Amino acid sequence: MKKEIHPSNYRPVVFKDMSNDEVFISRSTINTRETIEIDGVTYPLVKLEITSSSHPFYTGKQKLVDTAGRVDKFMSRYGDRKKK
Image 1 (cartoon, rainbow, N blue to C red):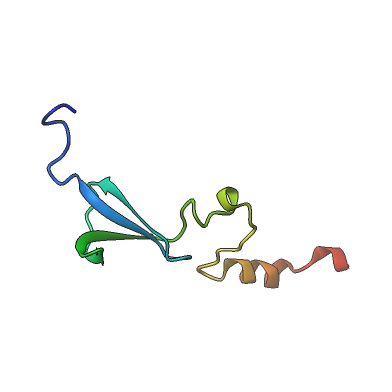
Image 2 (cartoon, rainbow, N blue to C red):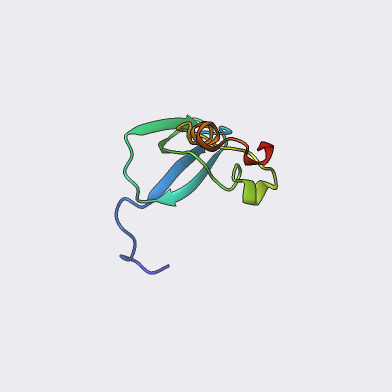
């Protein structure tokens, strides 16, 4: 690898999927305020709402990820149009 091409804060960071609590470690320059300890090592923590481990396209499961009640709001507004 060439020297002096990566930023100085390029380090291992933990990314955590909040929908299924899966974590993975990757290298990144992202700034974080939180940390997490894994196997006795403290890493910066980045919380994500959805990753490839929970996204329906990658898992093959249809799962509604509704963080703001958008699906309920839609259903109450438009409901089931087939009943009419």
